[in-house]
Amino acid sequence: MADWGQTQAALDTELAGIGQADDSHGQTLAFDLGLSAVPAIDNFSPAVGTPIARNDAVRFDVTDDNGLLRAEVFVTLGSETYVVHDGDNFRGAFSGLSSRGAIAGGFRYTVRRNSGWVDPPTFEVHATDVHGQEAS
Image (cartoon, rainbow, N blue to C red; front, side):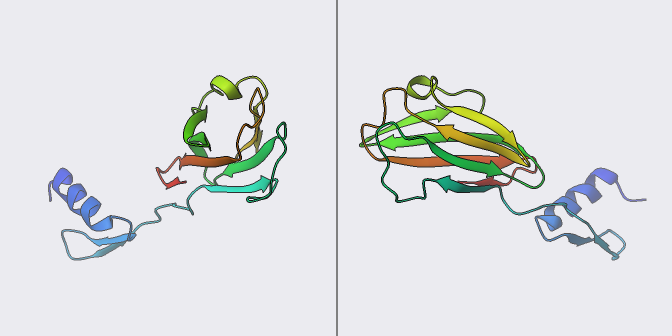
């Protein structure tokens, strides 16, 4: 009988996202990797590219059909980039008026800067699902 550790290592190497491999006896093994599409970052309101007023909120969803592990939100204003949400909490200038609510498959973010937008914001979101797939 083959050493399980060596067989598993060979399978892991061959699998690398293809979903099948030959075992040590030349038989093809198929696997359902259970992987889905990467997390979705969408439903921006107002729509991307739309001018916003100083005190407007920006809303968007971060979802994944298998579940999110973590999502981090950043915003660039002028030449400065700020952490909006570190995956656990809103930070600094975004902690007073922003919120995150649970929705099917993830979260809906509502972001407002405490003292209003001083420049047009550019958002950057990094999301990782429970399978380690990433989107930004």
